Amino acid sequence: MEAALQDTKKKQILEFCNLRSQFIDKESLELLEREEHWKEILEQFPETIIVSSRLREKLALHDSKVGRAERETEVKKTRFRAEAKDCSADCRVMKEFEVTNQSNSEGKIGDFLSYFRDKYEFLHSLLHNRPGFSPVTLDRMEKYQQYSEIDVIGMVVRKWVSKNGNLSFELDSPEGSCIAITPKDDAAASREAEKILLDDVIGIKGKKLSEKCSSGPI
Image (cartoon, rainbow, N blue to C red; front, side, top):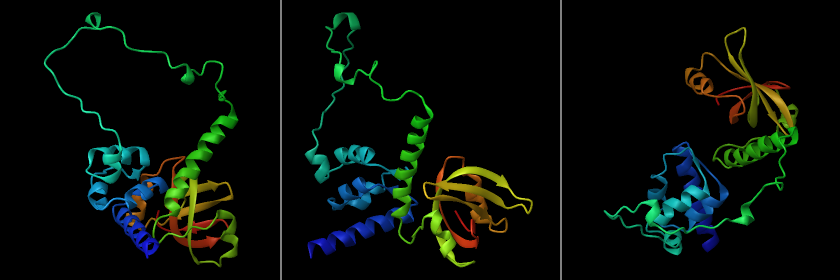
């Protein structure tokens, strides 16, 4: 019974975020499941992406279970302003965070690939959990018939306007690549597509036009 209630609450949270065009990560979802007034907490988020670090800050200030469990520090204002020379030094060098000659990153191509791969996997997980969105990997597009409804996720590697005036994108993913076309007669989709930049990770609901081409809203 308790598990069923948790699943219902999780679904309600995801649907609420979807209505507000927000993405929420798995850890944030688990934190909100414990809260009775989760809707009030989410309404305080103007951000499009809700991550656990920002959510914990909100919960610490809110009268919540997680907030009460966090240690709170009260900072009291005072008129007294001491000068630096009047205060004794109270600092230490945290050697455990010293990275001189210890960094694993050397600015090589592999480091950039790792960065984009991490970015793609994080945003892919957020998009994949959106209600009403069931993306398939790009290498499976060939299994769908022409004009079939299809959802996909990919990173934008190229953006251009076709000869017919349609805004087009080349999407890439670890599984493959495809071309996505936004019909120029779909004003709402075209406005959203104009905002998309290179290296953005986007989700598309559309129709398959060919083996490597789909059309639909972003």
